[in-house]
Length: 295
Ligand code: GDP
Image (cartoon, rainbow, N blue to C red; front, side):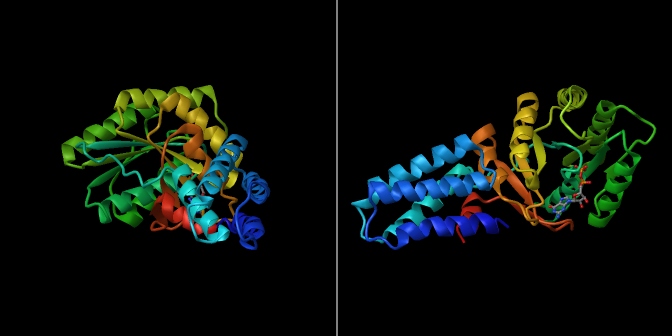
């Protein structure tokens, strides 16, 4: 994960590591390299610029106050700033309602159904909840089959209605079923589209209005780079989601989405997907991710 970015940051740091102190000139040069590395990693331009300006200012400001080497100082500042850029500390789900309704949104292939299964397993095993999955993708029978298979794997019940083509009615019926049978979390998987379109947005907005979810998790494929951030923006404008889920971070992703989403849409990343298996889910910790990026 992020190997390319790590290598490039490492190279940028070398300029400063060899120096005895931080000067306006050598820090500017290093920041130029760091900005390039971030842009290559698909971090959006404004984010990269604001980030390097901040790091530069801190490096110059703290230079005289400290006896540690320029390389160490810069590593510490970068660590703090990367952590802040990704949201500071981990943001937990709001699971306080009974039942808590969690709506899963995103484009086709982002990993919504896979994440729904993973989330059900996490809530059951790690958080002691009784989840119910709801198959809200009415357009693809295969999506219902897929959710049923995953539900069986993680041993969580799933509400389906193969006769219905009404995602709103299905979501509402799922919530009613949870209330009747004593499930305290309802995870509503929804239909995606290949690209953002009005019909998708109208439909998912209507599901939101009808079910009043406590969490709306926007699932996005980290491999899609800048597009991930644009899609996040479009979904957030319509849905005002409560958190993002970055999937496929196990692949050869450049990492830009992880670094840009928080600053562009001002919503936390809550989970990351690191594989196809049902246990390949991690709570997102900005500080751990920053340490990982800096190697
Ligand atoms: P949906 O259309 O949004 O419901 O997407 P799916 O859940 O069907 O996922 C699309 C593909 O991505 C499937 O082949 C999943 O196995 C795969 N996938 C989902 N999450 C991850 C992940 O975190 N890592 C990897 N490597 N593959 C994933």
